[in-house]
Structure formats: C-alpha cells, structure tokens
Image 1 (cartoon, helix red, strand yellow):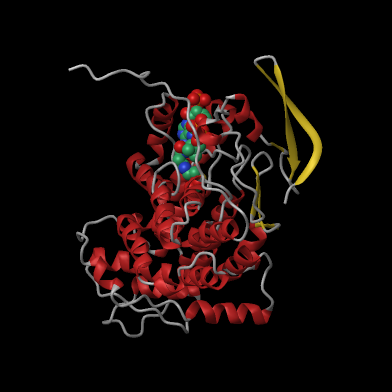
Image 2: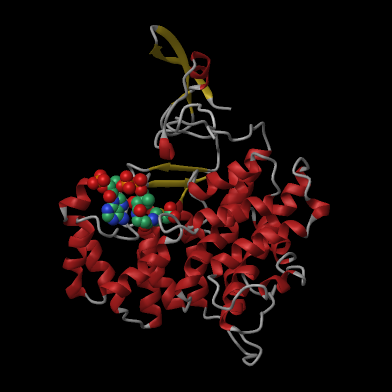
Length: 424
Ligand code: CMC
C-alpha cells in the first residue's frame, strides 16, 4: 500500500472545509485522495484524466519531465540493450529479472503454449482478405475467450498465471497469421527451437515452398528490441481500458481484445502506421517546410510527435533511433525516408511552435522505419505494438486481480436536457 504522508489538502466547498488525505508512492508526485468530496455532493472533474491517478501500481514508473521510464525500477535503455524481451516479460509479470534457471524455465513454459487451438485458425476465414490485421486481432484474441473454460477462474492464482503465459505465447502466432491471411499465404506454425523474436519472423516470412528459410539474426535482434521498447507504459489508454474491462470481472482474453481496440487509434498505437503514411505523403525533403506550415496551421498533426506524459524526450525514441541506425547500417539500406524523418525532427526540435509545446519524437517516430527495413508491411505496425504490449496489459490485469479492486465507474458533468414529459 502507498504511504499516508500525514499531510492533508483542504478543500473549501460551500463554506465547509473537507480534509483530503495525501499519499506518497516511492517515486513521482504525491496524490490527493478525493473520495471524500463525494459526501459533499460534488464530483471531481478531469476529462482526459490529465491529473488523475486511477490506481496504485508497482510495475512501471514514468517521469515525463525528465524522460525517465522504469520497469520494476530498471531503466528502459538498460532493458532494451541488456535483457531479452522474454526476460523483460518475466520482470513485468513477476517483479524481478529471472535467474538463469528461471529464464530457461520461463522460455520453455512460453514455448509450450505457442500453438493455438486449431479451431482458432478457422476464424480467419470469416474475414475479408483485405481486412486490416488489427481488425482480425481484435476478433481472434477476443475469440480465445471461448477456448479456455477450464482455466478461466480469475480468482484462482494458477489460472491467472497460465492465462498470462498463454497470451504472451500465442499472440505472435495470432499476429503472424493475421498477416498471412491477408496475403493469402498458408499459416506457418510456430517453431519452439527458435527464440521469441525469431519465431515471430519465421511465422511471418517462411513459406512451405522455402523449407530452408533462415531468420536474419540482425533482424531478430532488432525485433526483440522493438518488442522490449513497447512492453509496457504505465496507465496509458489501452492499459487503462484493460484494467477497466478487467474491473468488471470480464475474462482476460476479452480484456486484452479491448486493449487492442483502444491501441488501434492513431493518437495511440496506430501512430506508427500513421508516421509512415505521413512520410509517404510528404515524399521528399523539399516538401518538409510546406508540411510543417500545415502542422502549425493545425490542419494535420506531426505523427510520432508529442506525448501526454513526456514533455522532455521519450527515452524509448532514443533507443529506437539508435536501433534504426544500427539496422539500416547492418542491412546496407540507405532509406530516403530516414533522411526525411531526420529533417522533420531537426525542424521540430528548433521551431518555437514545437519547442513551446514540448513536442518531441515519441516511440512511434522511428519504429516504422526499422519495421519497414525488417520487411514488415505498414498495416502490421500496430499489430507488432499490440503483440509486444500484451505482456504489459496482462501484468496490469494480474496486479489488479491480486489485490482488492473496485469496478471502474466514473461519473460525469451532465449538460443535457433537464427532466421533461413526453407530450403527444
Ligand atoms: N503535431 C502537432 N501539434 C501537436 C501534436 C502533434 N503531434 N501533438 C500535440 N500538438 C499540439 C496540440 O495541437 C496542442 O496545441 P495547442 O496548445 O496550441 O492547442 C498542444 O500540442 C498540446 O497537445 P494536446 O493534444 O493537448 O496533448 P495531449 O497530451 O492531449 O495528446 C498525443 C498527446 C500523443 C495524443 C498527441 O501529442 C498526438 O496526437 N500526437 C500524434 C500521435 C502520436 O504520435 N501518438 C503516439 C503517442 S506515443 C505511443 C503511444 O502512446 O501509443
């Protein structure tokens, strides 16, 4: 539990003073407990949750002013460069990095669940071939709810644990198949001798015709790092959606499907796809100045820029840019879109419009360029984000279900019609 500081905020309402307790966490701002405002006949009002801590959590800490992101205390740049994605998953789920034995056990556990029930593969046929893979993901992940009745008691810690493993293990299979289906290629089944990232790339790009398909280790390493950089991000829109859905007691697969839906929007995970579309539209460096004028006239947004919490820099974007340089160099790719992106960044970091609003490149700004270099089609970018974030979502769901929680039920400032009678 959080520490009561002994400090109190005093709110005066209708001439009456209400004392509101203040709590401290281990890092970050103290919080004012506003529950007692209700007894005075008032609600608190904070559209967009700009100043609202919706829960207590021990998983991820962000200091947006300093550009700090910690998972269970470890800085994201250290995890991205010194730990694998599966080690990061273990950390998020269990609170500590695994020992060598725990790591090996976890990898075996995950690999034992990479297959999906064969019946799940039939769901794909119900979609049009030109369906967006995110639409397919919302459907098939939600559909998993129908498959694991025997392990769906959310009060049972063992059931919760197996569900988390299943989700982390199966999501790459479902994601790769959402791509295979749209290009009309046969589904490729997982291979447990491969690492997590290798297996995903294998299921994406191998075909029965190419029996000797080998995953390029440079691409597997980059993929693993991209997964790590997206693994969790505190109480963002999709994670809050998962918690809200979970607070009703809904089954976890349905909650994750809700998270995928929330992630899809261009203001959130859909931004990585939107960045590449934007770079395509701008076309070349000569058009950048004109595009930036449009942004300043608020006709369009500079996708991959800005963040609700980061007002200095996004530490994930730093590692992402470095990874982008490494991957393009290792593959010998000279992508003109990288030049374009760097020019946009250069202007944005010096132009008062962006400086005054504290708009910096976020995680999505460079990820699309790396994903493109890996050979991932643009429509799959947000699916990759969803794949990687599944562990974050389920870690928050687990945290919520391992302690007391209440159904999430916000109130409102009603501005509609007052009561009236039907007159006929
Ligand atoms: N391009 C141009 N102007 C912007 C941008 C942008 N990308 N983002 C914010 N602004 C302006 C905005 O118009 C406003 O200006 P003014 O004060 O004159 O009205 C000011 O900056 C503050 O913006 P806001 O909309 O109040 O900020 P917010 O915290 O509500 O929104 C955001 C944060 C991420 C939704 C927004 O910055 C955005 O839409 N960015 C582009 C989409 C994007 O890259 N999203 C990925 C976020 S990181 C990964 C993830 O979370 O999934």
